[in-house]
Amino acid sequence: MTLGEAEAWIARMEKSAARGVTPETATMSLAEYGDSVWDLAMRGLEAKTLVPYSAGWRLRVVPALGHLTPQTITAGAADRVVLAWIAEEVGRSTVKNSLAALVRVMQQAVRDGLIDTNPARVVGWQQLYRQAEDEADDPRSLALQDWSALQDLAAALVDRSHGKFEGWGDVVEFAGGTAARIGEVSGVRLKDINLDSWIWDVCRQTTPSPGGLADKGTKGKRRRKVPIIPQIRPLVLRRVAETDGSPMARLFTGPRGGRITTAILRDATHWDEVVVSLGYDYLRRHDLRHTGLTWMADAGIPVHILRVIAGHGSIETTQRYLHSSPRTIQNAGVTLADYLAGNVSFWQDPEPEPPAKTAEPPSRGHLRLVQ
Image 1: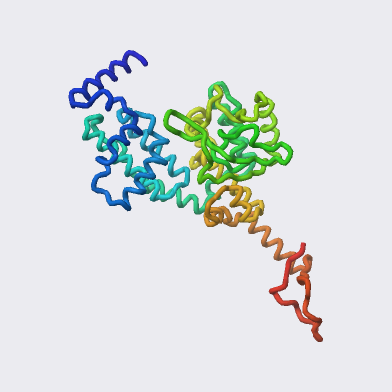
Image 2: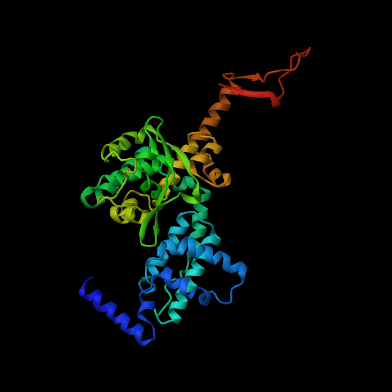
């Protein structure tokens, strides 16, 4: 702590003391303070409202901000937390209830004299959520065009990072090639990847928690299997060779060996500047996941398999990635043209009906296309 920071802290303590705030209350973390004033902050709420507020506080607010004191929470910190919730694709009501719980606790901190204004009154998040929904309805608009574009992005991010740390490029290519979240990439351990079958057992992610970053289960506790495609196998082998061989060794870390989050990746690589320079003004870190899932859909992976790889709870979410691309439309035209030209044939399922006296085309209910 610098001299200036120490003096500012002393000034805050003196101001709080003048308001009648005890030192114990003034140094409480948000999680501790919220627990101590919960009933007071939530007074007047009906039980049906209090339940989702409590869940939002426990599952969203405390892991993200609970380790900070109310005095150190800024409007910017609240903004970033809400944006992170939206990026995680949580429901609109979850964002609303979590934010409402935070606002009420911070408003109690205003009444207690801990802070002067409530920094949690985030405005405009509903518009951002609608924008995220619109983009999710057409994830193709969020996807990079091809593998070369992903490689170019990775190289540009490495070039802008301090010390040109190549690990950032590995994180970006791995996330795009596996359609994974950045937190899930950070959570990969050596034992999670089978180098014989080239299957990744996705079972944990790095997430903010009281006291800092921690590893926990994946979103929705949905453990899943993801293929490691040949394009990223060399970087995986290189990362494996750089570990100490321990099954719990991390494959992806920051330059100092720490955990990675989307915010850390953004700041370390000057992400916002790089994507604008490449013409991808819209591109967020989470769009690496959209890119991978869009490519898989375009490759013809069946929707029920794509759902498992993505870890989606609902198949409706997965179906958003099945919008036809120009290439798939062209392929449909080629298939139809081949059929009309007689280059494909049809055959009946087993147990055909007895031959008719006159030649008739088989029923459409028994047709199967054979290339």
